[in-house]
Length: 88
Image 1: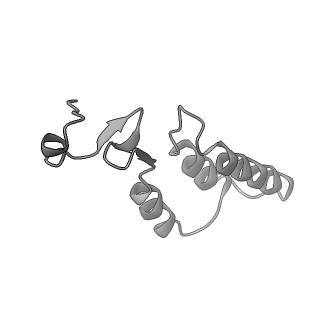
Image 2: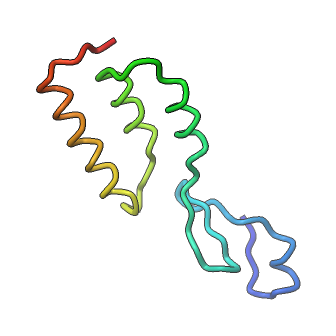
């Protein structure tokens, strides 16, 4: 990874990936790539314990930025468990 604070140089550089997140150095912003998650959700035919666990496991977040959302999915998993959904 190569970064620069020179505007002429940095205009040729793509946003950098840091800890699985996309860091745009020009805007000094961090973005989470959701395309893979969206593709996974589009192909789910039936909500099962397995499909929800797989979805939650795909959310890589070492910095804790999306922890509130992951927490909501864990609550959903508890509700699915109580309603005794199938694994498959």
